[in-house]
Image (cartoon, rainbow, N blue to C red; front, side):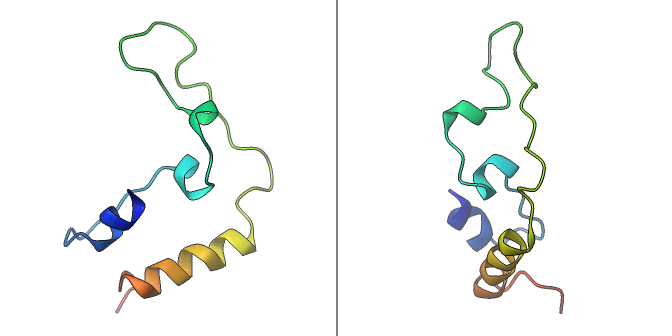
Length: 68
């Protein structure tokens, strides 16, 4: 899914934090058509580190999404 988003011709490509972190269904932000327990997921401290930034930058280089 992320590849399709980044390959798109759209000016802006938005990917969820959960996808960037490679998390599964346990990290869902919400479940449509349900009440309660939605929008409670929080990222753990330290997960957005230099290693992840380097990985994301590499993807942005591959898909030509860095500022010109």
